[in-house]
Image 1: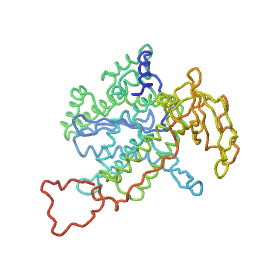
Image 2: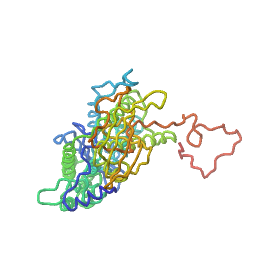
Image 3: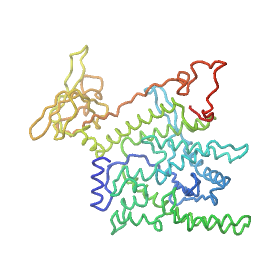
Length: 507
């Protein structure tokens, strides 16, 4: 936990309400997100029990599995869910936009918008990931056929689950994570995973503190769990008898319909409070203005959505069960680059996030006291515009002479530390030489060089381009990492050891 978040949590306890740790919203919110509240049967491996789905508060549609242990009913549920999710996805494929590439010499096309799925908590993302894995390899023909939409749904759910791992992506969002990214409560991180308790801190009812509202929300009789887990008392005393009654009904259509209606009402009662909390949380996030770089990250989600849709349309296969060695390394490298870029962008967008880096010495804020915007360096083969400014700050300056700094106000500009001199009253004078972001001439355009009196934030964090790493092609990968063997085995080579597992996949 960072120092500022710990302070914000202490202030939340003292004030009785959650405290903001962000001044802007750091994720995109769609105009019509698809909210999905899943519920799974306890004691079964990701067995779907019910789901409440819809793209508006008044469009909730309840899907249930009367007997979650029944294989056919599970896939009937998947087909029913596909009947909602797939048309929602197709609704974003009608309009495309041109994106310039190669410095404006050419264009490519992508969908103008992308879908967004919202679930209550990270466990909801895990549910969708496992559900996608269990459905994307199913076939509409053969021994155990399913509806043709089921494997397609599985591939899309896997796509969203993979995007959820991408830092900064907003394609699939757990609402508890989105809320705690912007507010700090007076409870632990584990307690923040409980959506009713979290919203109790963020928006307590009149006359109650956040702690009191959270304590009331932890009562399952008042606020059922936000899924996919259920309350054990509910499982044992209400759910189990209702499922047993449905099973006992057998072929008796009247008894079966009555049992189904009872089970449907029971599950709707469990899911409706979470459904209402989801839209309440969305409203809190909408009240925050989006950060300046949120739209750029959403463009990445639109690119990924377009690429996956084209892959499916082109007859591409489902995602593999596991990545090969090179594919896994490439994916990890891509996620690491995205995480670095996401951390920098959040700091550039939000002074409260940048304050964390000021505490660690990665940034400082000061006032420009001197500026020479016309300075030209003629020591090289040709003269170059190299203005200098002096910044005076009361904060510790831990960067050495020669270090390169950046300012969120002018992200394309570099500032090299030339001198660092202690001054009176605990202040520090820092002389910086500027380069970049001022055109190609010997005269700086207005506004490109900080003026005297401007308050400036300078940091070692850079939002510049991060080059991708290079990885070998599959045919050049050693056989120990999934590539082809160096030499073919001899005809009289000994057989594998009997201890080896022939079903084990090392790729």
